[in-house]
Structure formats: C-alpha cells, structure tokens
Amino acid sequence: MHFRSLALATVLYGASATLAWNHPNYKYVAIFSVDGFHSSDVGKYVSLRPQSTIAQLLETGYEYTNAFTSGPSDSFPGSMNQFTGASPRTTGIWYDDIWDRSYYPPFSTNMTRCEGPPGAEVEQAENLDYNSTELFSGGINPDNLPQTIINGKCQEIYPHMRLRVNTIWEIVEASGKETAYADKHPAYDIVRGPSGKGLTVGYFPEIQSIANTVNATIAYDQLHVDAFLDWIAGEGKTPEHSEIQGAGLTTTPALFGGNFQAVSVGQKTVGYTNGTTQAFTAPLLKALDFVDKSLGRVVSALKAKNIYEDTLIIVASKHGQAPINPALYRKVDPALIVPATGVNVSWVTTDDIALIFLEDQSTLSTAVAGLEKATSELQIQDIIYGPRLTALGYGNPLKDPAVPDIIVRVNLGVIYTTSTAKIAEHGGLSDDDRKVACFVSSSRLKKTVFDQKVSTRQVAPTVLKVLGLNPEELQGAKIQGTPLLEGF
Ligand SMILES: *[C@@H]1O[C@H](CO)[C@@H](O)[C@H](O)[C@H]1NC(C)=O
Ligand SMILES: *[C@@H]1O[C@H](CO)[C@@H](O)[C@H](O)[C@H]1NC(C)=O
Ligand SMILES: *[C@@H]1O[C@H](CO)[C@@H](O)[C@H](O)[C@H]1NC(C)=O
Ligand SMILES: *[C@@H]1O[C@H](CO)[C@@H](O)[C@H](O)[C@H]1NC(C)=O
Ligand SMILES: *[C@@H]1O[C@H](CO)[C@@H](O)[C@H](O)[C@H]1NC(C)=O
Image (cartoon, rainbow, N blue to C red; front, side, top):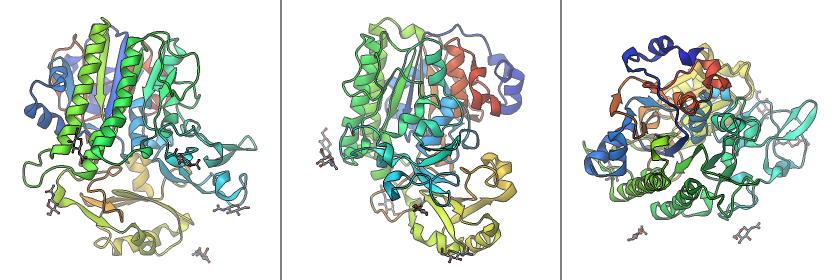
C-alpha cells in the first residue's frame, strides 16, 4: 500500500505532490554504482566536463541531490539498500566483515562443524575464494563459509543465505525476465538474494587479485564494462568466466548493471586537493573520466540496439568516502578500542566506524563508560548503544544476533587503521560516507532536481515500478514502508 500512496511519501520525505505522474513502464533498467561518487562530486564533475555523458544524462534526468546510502555505509549494506529497499536491521547485512552471535567459524578455521559456543566472525570477502590472487578465483570454497544450525543441521552460510529479505533481482527473475550483474568476487553472491536465484548471469572477477592503483582498477572495471556491452547486445553471449552457470542470456536483460571501483580507489589512494575547493586530483579525475566514458559507451550501445528510449538508467553509489577534505584525515590504531572498553569483546569491525560486539551484553554500561573516557584518544564523535541504538533504527542487539552492541561514530576524517596506504575510507556515518550520487535518466524525463532528503533504499521499489512489477513484493521495503523515489 505504501508505494501507491504519495501521501505517505510526502509525510516521510516532503515530496511535492505535483511532481507525481504515471510514467509508462520501461522495458529495461540499467543500474550502476560508482563506488565512492559523492553527491557533491556530481556538480563538480559536470562543471569541469560540461560535455560529459553524466552532464547529458542529467539533461534528461532526475537528480536527487540529498540522497543518503545506508548507515553503516559499507558496500554490503549500501548495495542492499538499493536492491532490497531495506536497512541492516531488516536485511541482517551490516558489513562484509562482522560478527554474528549465532554463527560458528568456518570449517577451515578449526575443523569443526558448529561445535563449541556460538558466535563467529562472518567475513564474506576474498577470504571465501579458493584463490583470491587469481582474477577468476575458482568460486567460493564452502569450507571458508561461516556455519550455523538450521533445522537442527549445521550448514555453511553463503552470502545470499545471510540476507533475510528478497531483492529486486529475484523479483525480476521470477517474473520471467532476465537479469545480469557485475561486481567484485565473491561477495556479490549476496545480490542473488535468499533464494539464490536472482541472477540469470553474474560476473564477479576478484578485485583483490589486482594492484590497488587507479590504473589497475580502471583495467579491472573495464571487464565489467565489456560485460555490460555484451549484455546490451543480447546475443546470448555471457562473459567467459561467468560465475552463475546456466543457459545464459537469450536477450538483453530487463535489469542489468554493476559497479565501478576506480573512483573509490582514487579517493582512497590520492583523493581531493587541500584547501577550500577540494578539487579532484589528477588520478581521481582520470577515474571519473573513465567512468563517464564507460557510461557513454553504455548509452551508445543502447542507442545502437534501438532500446535507449525504453531504458531507465540509474546511477546511485553504494557508498561515499570520508574525508573529502584531506586535511581532516587522521588515523587511530584500532587496537586501542578493546582495552578502552575495559571488558571482554567478541569482535570489533573497524574502518571509519567501530562496531563492537560484547562477550557479555550485561557489561554494556562498563564498556560505554570506558569509551567515554577515551573519547579524545579514539576521536569519538558519538557512542550509540542501548535503547537509543534501537530508536535510531539499527535494530535490537538483545534480540538480533547480527546487531552490534555499540556503534562508534568517529570525528570526520578519522580512520581506525594502521595502514599508511589509505587516506580515505567508507563504512562510517558521516555525510562524506553517506551522501552519495543518485540520479536517473531517460530520454523521456524532463530535467528535475530533487533536493529533499531521500534514501537510496527508494531505488529498489522504483526499479520494480518502472519495469511494471509490483514494488510491494519487496519484503524489506514493505517492512520499512520505503516509498518510491520522487517523480515516480
Ligand atoms: C573451534 O572448535 C571448538 C570445538 O572443537 C570450539 O570450542 C572453539 O570455540 C572453536 N574455535 C573458535 C575460534 O571458535
Ligand atoms: C593461487 O594462484 C596463484 C596465481 O595463479 C598461484 O601462484 C598460487 O600457487 C595459487 N595458490 C594456491 C594455493 O593454489
Ligand atoms: C597510469 O597509466 C597512464 C597511461 O594510461 C600512465 O601514463 C601513467 O604513468 C600510469 N600511472 C601510474 C601511477 O602508473
Ligand atoms: C593536505 O594537507 C595535509 C596536511 O594538512 C597533507 O598531509 C596532505 O598530504 C595534503 N594532501 C594533498 C592532496 O595535498
Ligand atoms: C574475560 O575473558 C577472560 C579470558 O577468556 C576470562 O578469564 C575472564 O573471566 C573474562 N572476564 C569477564 C568479566 O567475563
């Protein structure tokens, strides 16, 4: 019911009722995440490159200039925002490397099957690969998966099994249309959704196998772009190393897309210039130009196939990157966090955030008191815990084994790391982490800027609506009452 109710959207997001009209459906949706691409970068880029594809897309597009990705803003929950319409409390997806109080370690860790006390790290990144030094890493080694007991049986948990609600990919597939998605291996198994059937084709080369440089990442992203072009051509071709086996595509998929990582790597390694302008450094601009040129190739391919008019292009970043201003960058040793709590801690996820799981949840107030004393040493802006954590929409750690006991929000620019390689990171709660690029474009749209606050969760129901499917089928969006994007 929420999706049809503009009144609700107005209450939640302050939309103007005059902007709603019924769009005829689109046959295709092409959805891209330019990882790291901030809302503020869009305007900066377009003023530098007024002839760019991005500038042209905006000429017939809706731009959401106040769009926020998930909190935490790790790639995992950031993607789930767009693909399920729901937040970590609903999806159960908090981070690619975190803890779950009900899980057991992978078989490869200590050769046991759900033995000993529950509680284990859930890492769903390159660690799952057979061999992460290879671009096509042999798939997921089940021995590396965390385990849990389901119906009395110890089972390995693939990323897609950890997700609690369905995805747009599953719903589009189930409607008889085809889908295709490219991202890094193997984490994006999760995109398939809990049924594991959300993708006709998935293409997941392993990012860890390449150097952490802009040039190498551009070459890596080019693989994704080649896949997009193959998919648009719709000649039944699938990339040679397609991860999802099956008959392959028979036509241009109704829903396809993937991500770009070169901008994120440019931000982490080189970033923005100092001073008031905070302009793109040359390597970051090179990454942005590559993305822009690639989007141009997608547009050309859609036009060549004569389906551009029938396609809605969505560009929405899973995450931003903090800090934009390099002068704010400051690193703090993550090893200082646990001693500061003064209690036993099961697990801490650290980036430009800390997510703390206590060994004994009754030690919460002691742990918080310890962190409060260390606020300056640990560069803490806010300690979120207890009833306030639940009230802010993060779920309830006393009831949900995936919810951390304490969320530490850091001062802008602080990263809990010992790495000297990175000057920016994402995952945290700042605007630099969360205020992301978000726009949609099609030849049918009239240029409009929406400056009301929106969530990238709104992308999910919007995708289904424009494909003529029912947004209410999205379990997570329904639970959270996630409205469509404004204008739809
Ligand atoms: C490994 O398995 C044993 C049971 O054999 C269990 O007691 C222990 O906690 C497990 N180790 C870890 C690191 O979880
Ligand atoms: C992983 O792949 C690399 C590169 O092909 C190879 O050198 C290495 O031996 C492989 N490791 C294992 C454990 O197979
Ligand atoms: C990146 O590639 C360009 C050629 O495209 C080259 O000129 C440049 O030196 C390379 N940068 C680095 C850091 O290797
Ligand atoms: C920005 O200034 C800081 C010192 O305030 C310096 O460490 C950093 O290297 C500078 N970054 C750039 C991109 O100029
Ligand atoms: C903390 O862990 C240690 C080692 O496992 C244990 O001896 C100690 O009793 C624990 N402390 C508390 C307060 O549970």
